Length: 248
Ligand code: TIU
Image (cartoon, rainbow, N blue to C red; front, side):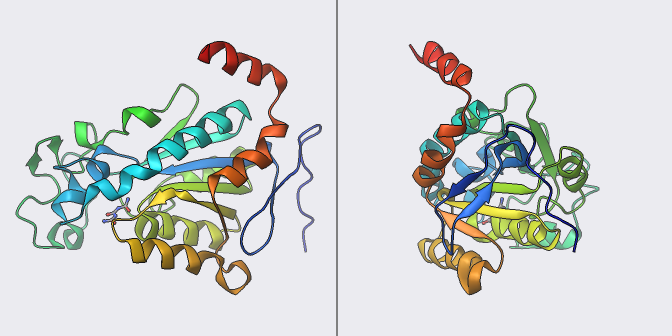
């Protein structure tokens, strides 16, 4: 069995209280992954709404996720934003996905926020509240999982990332698919329960249970205040001072 990699010199090991037991992570080897916080899923007229969903269900994750993003930046964690979407010519969209749902306004059709789920369109963009900043990775993905047909695994391995804190939408679709893909590749995943959202209350509840059941079959689950309280002490004082001066 290869030995677990040692934490980088001076880096703190953090134990986040979680289900089914504490999630131990080193912020220097952990990435915050924010899945598909795009207008197409959160705003009226986008892909999520066209599928018949109540998009307001997802808005509740924005505020807790902003606090987590702020902390991850201060703690020096890698931040990865994903976007589900396709090339304007739809060459990367399987016919099965195009046909699914028998939509009047399918992927690629003109909607109120531009062409549905097409890269470069307004609706495809990440919402302002969680806009990526310089140095953060923005990963375009054609599927539900963030590892399928992307260079995510290569990026994570090159950066020495072993642990993922997974957030975004939707819990039982793109979040679940990504956590399952990550788990099979050996990444340890913590899902923040109030920072992932579903259009269906029952899927949210059961989706989270499925991750942490059976001793953590795919990963760990905890609410964001537990994560923030555990990671905050490892934030360098210089970053705290900078954040205070920015917010005053
Ligand atoms: N429809 C639905 O719940 N989700 C998606 O289509 N994509 C993501 O979850 N991002």
